[in-house]
Length: 214
Image (cartoon, rainbow, N blue to C red):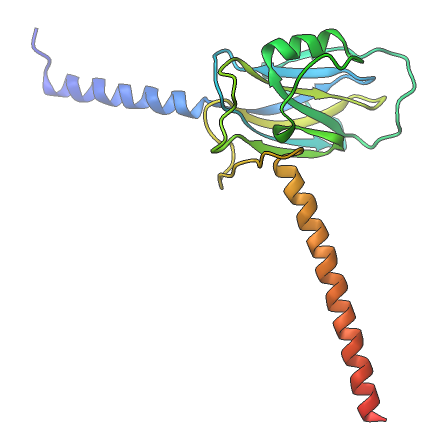
């Protein structure tokens, strides 16, 4: 049976819409909660990939958890003494095999993660990482795991994708511990040095002018 022109146009349009929907659905955004006392939240890709991009923001107040938002929650080990942190999280990028080890042994260290795509040196309130032009070595299911080092539930907003960047301006997390977040620390240090230099120059100029005026 011959396909008429209107039918062909309709089928083509439907195909394009399906492509747009698939691409649009490749970024997951929502709010979640990580239980206290070392509790864990994690999410993994349901396919093998060498890519991940995510933007994490911790909330200082409680949030409504997005219904049906992806992720698995693992309760912490209560009660036990915890540091007195403001709401903050530790973020690890790791494979699905390692997230299983991590979630089954909350206090252990028998798991591996990617330092350049993690925020782990201190608990953080934000963490932005993107594989960019440095694909991961292992083409397997990739995961983001969040751990709560406080004695209260921590709520967060997250955008994550295992297909494309979640950021308007693309970047590549450098292959150093802390990845993209390490650049923010350098930027803060540079601003502090710049500010000190400006104060020093202004003070010096004020002394020079005061000498000429007297």
